[in-house]
Amino acid sequence: YSGGGSRVTQLGWAGTVPVPADYDGDGRADVAVLSRASSTWCISYSGGGSLVLPFGYRTMTPVPADYDGDGAADVAMCHEASGRWYVRQSSNGAHRQETLGGPDFIPVLLLPLIHSWFGLP
Image 1 (spheres, helix red, strand yellow):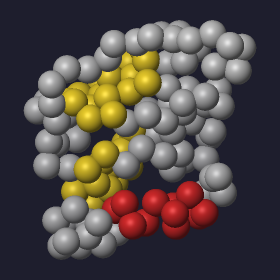
Image 2: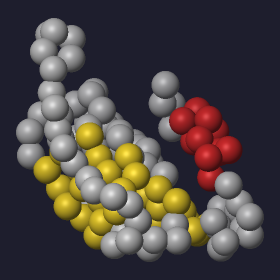
Image 3: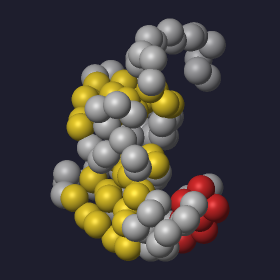
């Protein structure tokens, strides 16, 4: 932290993957993990509070980013085999589905494009 303090948070268990992003739009990354087994996102907001959200399927790749342009990262998953992206918009909780790519599509290669498209650093 810029104030010189520190924060220790235990979040997750075996089989979880880190998915940090600024989910609350305060300009600081939030501690977050995704349970692959249950497709449950667990987010600990840097400003306090938390969210536990079942979203996606275990065969999907997490791709959190600010897709709705509200300044906060959206919970999002990509099904690589079909090219379908599923986004839970942070601005209103609405679910969006887009198709981009197809079989053997690797969303990580598009992250620079996505960040540029939405004007993200």
